[in-house]
Length: 218
Figure 1 (cartoon, rainbow, N blue to C red):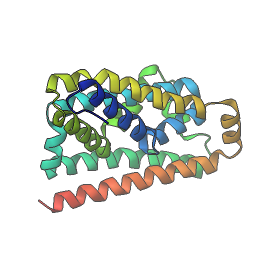
Figure 2 (tube, helix red, strand yellow):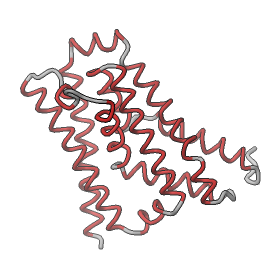
Figure 3 (tube, rainbow, N blue to C red):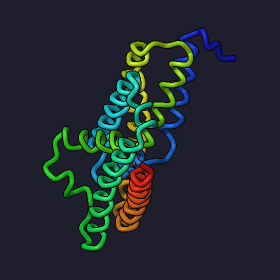
């Protein structure tokens, strides 16, 4: 039984919820898996680190009410959905172009002469432009506030949640970059790239249509 008066128990429950949510399939997992299969473990960990930075940032922002503002300001949420949708649409087109031109592989060009910053930036963009992530962190922040934590205490948890995100997506990065997985992907890379294109495409369409709908509701 969780005692809402015990900050430690509250944080443990919030952390458990965060880990379970992060482990579920979504844009971040797709980005890490694609990087791992196409570019290997190091690049996948770069992307995971970028996503972790996005988690850190959203926790800080939600501690000071940005998440609540997004929920109550349709124009801001709609704009964010359009921005996120545009980025995922770009990823979709890159994957489709690779399949159509038979260029193995889509992320070869994206990570051409890549530095650690390139993969990190990609992961951060995936994490920061996903409205669902923003609203999820807003819900977590609301739970923490409702349990008696202050804004400073919630902001202080940002490194904890960021590390949790890196551990979750780092695990997926290691898993998908294992030799057997990469070898299998080399044989059917067009299929996997088409799947990633479909995943990113569905996300892009959902975000763009959601953004347009929010704008029309003004």
